[in-house]
Amino acid sequence: MSDRLKVLPQYLIPKQALTVLAGKLASAQAGGLTTGVIRWFVGRYGVNMAEAANPDIAAYPSFNEFFTRPLKAGVRPFANAGYLCPVDGAISQFGRIERDQIFQAKGHHYSTQALVGGDRDLAVQFHDGEFATLYLSPRDYHRIHMPCDGRLTRMIYVPGALFSVNPTTARGVPGLFARNERVVCVFENDDGPFVLTLVGATIVGSMATVWHGQVNPPRPGKLREWDYAPGEVSLRKGDEMGRFLLGSTVVMLFPKGRLRFTPDWAPARAVRMGEAMGERRLR
Image (cartoon, rainbow, N blue to C red; front, side, top):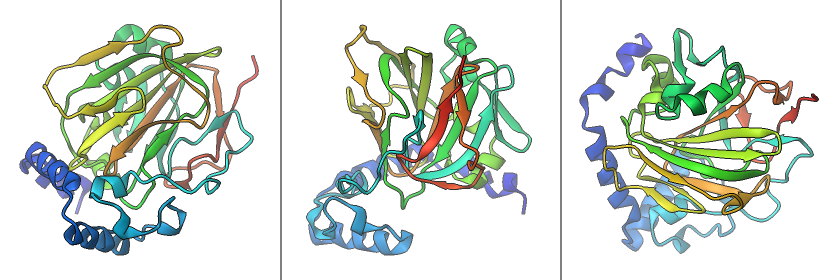
């Protein structure tokens, strides 16, 4: 069966209603029932609780608190590299942005302008630059960290669909990451601007950042934007910047001539937060 046929049911199901319901259930504190669901989830997806700061399944009052659990100190050492991988997950795609086109999967591209919510002036800064798309599966650690130092300048909430973001859907839904709901975080540092985009998905109850808290819900159905004064939000390489409730995807954009990816990166390769992602290109 082709990937397009496999994802056809996703066009038909009430994705937003399912996501709202999942969010309510995940935040519920139901005692033994919650513990039972978490125990099933750990077994079903092979979650490594030995890495959690608190490995006791019964200690989490809600599924959300389990899902966004912190890790033990030291289990994700930071590599000595110019850029760090910001998440646990798998590499969906990465490489050069061809003028304004980001490679999604065979036969599918989407534009930087579409990804960032239609802002041409922002998007043009990444023409012929570099991108990386990282997929977080249900078993992964779901906090997102900074790949490098950054000063936040803008945050843009872009409403959209709620398709799954798994590899099959990436191959079957054109422009997936520019169609789904997303939060675009625009940073700058001494090397110029860069973008981290948190992409939502079916039953991803919400996305949150450390400076704003929960961004969605609410889901007003229109673009929202926040601007930040110089120095208002500054984060260091490796700092936590946000989190997902249930699995999703991060898309990063860097300007031309900024980043050289580490040689052992390849599509579908598993990655861990804190490992080397790349080095600064010498100017």
